Length: 88
Image (tube, one colour):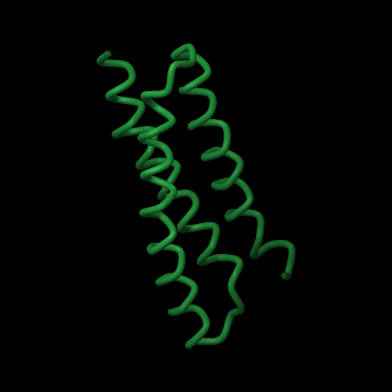
């Protein structure tokens, strides 16, 4: 139960943060659009975090719960780091 609780709190936070950063990075680079992108990313992070908490307490093996949280978080974090370098 402690592993699922930690997955919900820490893994959910990590996934929600990575999603927010990715969305803020993918919006256009104008000043107004950058602020709107950051705001949209933060608002969507609440939805992602809620889904991660629900996923953490679903009846699946704990290894799948952790993988379902950490793999997408790593992919989103990598994509948000590489996005500015691609010139998009």
